[in-house]
Length: 290
Ligand code: ATP
Ligand code: MG
Image 1 (cartoon, rainbow, N blue to C red):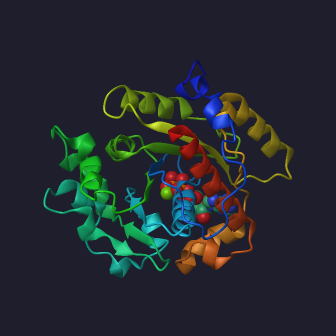
Image 2: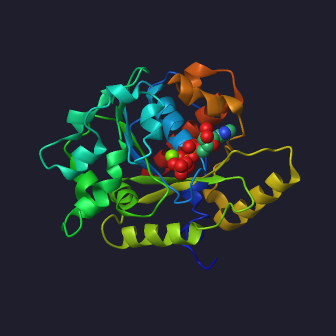
């Protein structure tokens, strides 16, 4: 891999420094940083949805209004909190139809302070619908702007592709978080992702910041997992979050019960890992705005 945008800022001293010693405790309100964070990696099954769902829940536990936007036609993050039958209009309508706002589609999750802009399988037709539209890449951003800061934080779950939906997310976001699965082919495809990020930064969203890379489904008992972690660290340097998400059956089970890990298994390693990732996310975002 050549001089990638991530490598260029991998040793950003602002990110590396701990500007605010001590960690906020559970339940404290977040400080002033306003996050719109896209969770993206075009590789499938790397933990994007699991990260989006549990990061959104962790942010909501800090007593701030949080919106989870599902941009994946598979609708996995929507059905992690909602019943299929409860979903009427979806992100397809909000993006394709000028007269539908995000407010028209948003539903409350069972967790306080958390709302969902749900997806449906029909979202897969969006690309065809927006062919030739001059503002195709800006649709989501425009709809988020209409919310006028109603939500302190917005988390966007992206599909496993680098098409129009992911680009809409990158154009609308202040930050990007990349989950990378602790697996033999972990880094496959990251060049394409970084190229897309760079294109978005060159024109439509120069202020998009790469918050970091989180290693998911890590099994620290195996030598292979340790090698993979080293390899990811070599490529992404200090962009890699200190928090590593370990492999946990509880994390796999919680969507079936329509719960985040924090209510489903609050004492599990999954809950500890995602809580600590949330703290690091806030810390890094604040370090960049300070
Ligand atoms: P897609 O690209 O299809 O949208 P994704 O990147 O969103 O996938 P997830 O759906 O979050 O990935 O995770 C893929 C599978 O791995 C799911 O079955 C999920 O429950 C499981 N999984 C995610 N994280 C973990 C973990 N830390 N431990 C165990 N299983 C996990
Ligand atoms: Mg997913």
